[in-house]
Image (cartoon, rainbow, N blue to C red; front, side, top):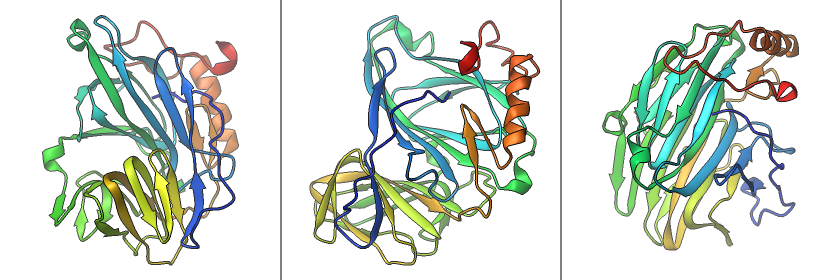
Length: 308
């Protein structure tokens, strides 16, 4: 999706446990009847491992004939994954991809040196009432791969590693964790997983990644003596063993993290790079029409923010 400016998430001073380095409370913004909660980046936390953008969108109910329309827009320097919890979206990009996204599946778009894409509710879905919710995440590429050729992968949920033990189910979306590796091609060491815990069940986070965190989608969890409700991101202290316990209604969590980068990353609108100058070039390339549009969705586009 395209970056839309929103209020910075809040990072309270007290986290309730020395295992928690940071607690992030997103702030919601209504984008014309569609609610989005921005988690990353925040004023006090720009990245978690290579993850530089994390939006929780919806849930939103649409009347027949209505839906979401994210017009074609560009990206550089990242790979994106749209992970749906409910509903569907139609992804089109400048490589000619035309792919439906359904809950549990992975659409992994590598922007590299430059790509454009759109995401819309399909015409078929608009024929009836529908509901949409999901997570939009951007993963920054290492400096050596920022100029890689754009690419696209789709993996249905059945192709992703699925782990099940007493009271816990976990689907590995990206990277490696718990002895499994997802099929998606990544460029740095990371993990991203969807875990569902029954009430009172404990889960240890992977301890072999430099930075780790989680986002509480549903229910609540306890870390030490402190309880944390839904729509909170917890960033954990590096090097600490961390175990979370699901609250009385259980919990659904997104676990994520990975290796930090040696160089800072700059983010402006939909452009991410280790070079401010590269972002300035991308601005002009978009303004001057040097990015190709999706061939099957090229009648409109999203202008640069200052040109809108």
